[in-house]
Length: 73
Image 1 (cartoon, rainbow, N blue to C red):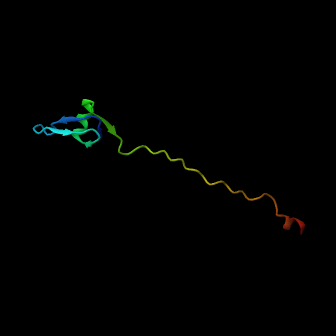
Image 2 (cartoon, one colour):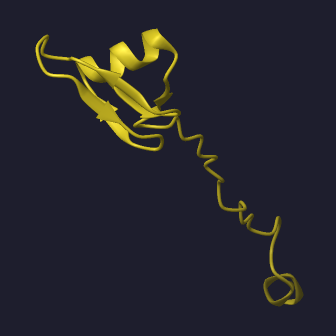
Image 3 (cartoon, rainbow, N blue to C red):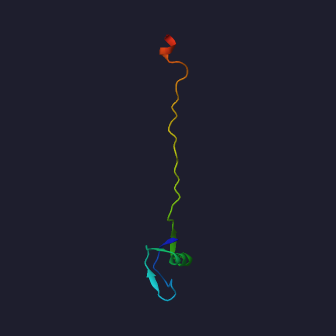
């Protein structure tokens, strides 16, 4: 999980050392979960859902019946 810090924030992810994060930094893992829980970050979507429209090529139809050349003979 990744999150982007939206305001200056400090936490101790390992329990003993306080680390300060500035607004705009991207954090991940346990720090991201803590920041989201405190409301100091927003989640960053790593893999956005891509919607791709697949277009079929236009269908080329053969003319019906015989060609003019064959009909005149």
